[in-house]
Image 1 (cartoon, rainbow, N blue to C red):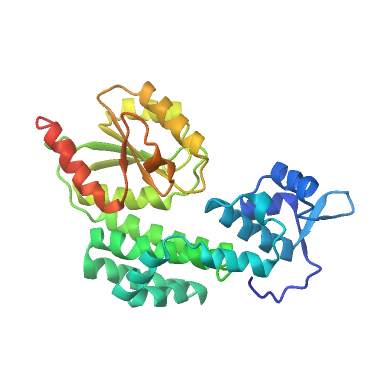
Image 2 (image 1 turned 135 degrees about the vertical axis):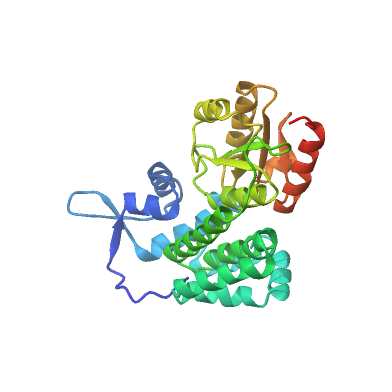
Length: 316
């Protein structure tokens, strides 16, 4: 875990723990009764308050849960045992290592985040876009760098705010790059209208922004709704915007049943002429892809998917 200079007596409220870790208040209370952890104290008003050490441990437990571990099996591990487990279950370590070898500056970018040199980070990212082009920047630099940042958080090397600093910086660079892409008129032949968003349970927006960059680079006309759009509003937006494709991003943290049920409901509510594409790191997309939903296994499959769409819609 991270060493902290903050006195151990400092505590945080249950609401702050919920925001910081992503674990709901109900979950924290159930774990307290069922597993004996966390063990909050009480403030002068009788409300639960948590030590920073407990919050650190809860963060790692949440990250391990996102990787598929069950809380009942790991919640009573020591901080050291949790860190060892996190080290052994880091997602795609081989891919991250290969990317680091191909781009020696990835680790340097990671250290810029840790040193809070955000202006320098953004400068180097901007130079990378110009050097390798937008498509390679997203697939070969940002995608593996995202994994490295996530792994650093799992190991306790990054704080939540440092991960947020990184995410915001990448979003700024990608939006600037997208705005510089020259496009013909939106009705140009072979240029599909693509609506991008996430479901209400998915707050992570970097994946959908990376997809938008690649769709735009490949000639798509993108309309982004941002994150956490209710399904009925997605349907309304797709209808009013004459969307040819609705593209959604899902992280590994999402409940698989919510993903499948939501996609099935969305597909049923949209006209047959509007395709539904789904991508991201949620494993259920590839184990049990919903019917009539195109799943994109990797970011670099976007170009092929658009080629297929154009072949199927020669008069578009």
